[in-house]
Length: 459
Image 1 (spheres, rainbow, N blue to C red):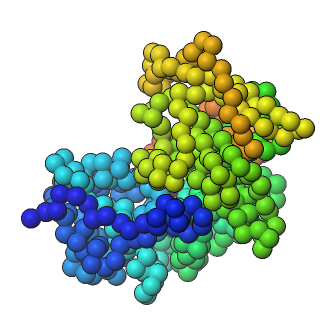
Image 2 (image 1 turned 120 degrees about the vertical axis):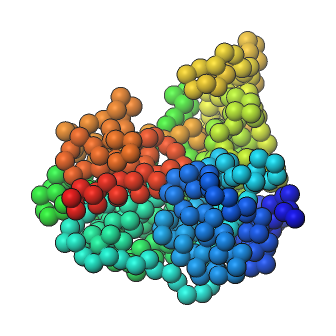
């Protein structure tokens, strides 16, 4: 008989984890993984595969787990996914593979993400599985950006025998995986482990290389690269445009999380990049980045951490799991609330002036538009404010490649399937094309572009 509910994953207790940056979920044991894998129906239609942006053979790797062939399981995953430990942790499986799981029509869906994480973690404790690399083709490809889109494209192209070099502007590879996602959700050692696997395949990664400054896209192509893939992401913070945003203590989520994650502010004084959050922190926004920021603030010592979001809980764009964890940890939600000004004292933020909102007619996004309630103005005292309302496209490549076609929003215009741009041999994918999206969507774009580049180079 099939268990009606997914096998739960052990977690740190909320009152413990708010005082450390250790990972919250603790993973499956071998027996737990086998028990969960036994719930899979192994249905012939396998809608879960179609629901996966990178096309993992989900029934195949789950069947291998059920048979306790864990090495075969991770091998099957890596045929399609170069970053399984990352995806198993931060993928929104509930709206993708698990969202279309046949079992989920009547019972809880199979916990595919937890099983993928189990396989990747099992590999870390045993012999590493390095995908086979085809014979050299003699073709060279430049990858600009080492985030999820760039790393995926690099792995796919290297597997097919191409000479691949990744150019990263920061001092470490990983992009948003390193600077944007907190340690308690995605430990940096795991990202490094995934990147090391690509290096073992033969992918070269050059850090501190700012394409657009050390060389332009056109110069790379003139210097011997046969194709280029742009995966520079959405790294330009967006702001509210209200009074007081320039006060000390008001951060973009990009800066707040980069200082904490990549620069290890939480290990001060070992790492000399402190963030003094004070007693009360307000985070503006309702997505995963907002949840990450609010939860990080608690771990940095805040006594109270607020989420301010202008719509209701039903419209929160964050994953349900992240909202659940935030509530468990004591994050306070000020919903149907919109900041209209940041108030300061001696140059530093001291409060957020807000309006209560109500939901009106749907807007262009399909969500009901928030409308201010007259006479509802109030203040929330705050020592630190984090603005987490999204990011725009990284502007450097478009600025230094003036003949590269852009969308009205400033993103690179690229074919939705192949990633081809208007420039011969130049492809793009991920957030630089779509705007801010999920890690796995960026990986899917990188994989599709890699396939298109390969077909072009070998036709």
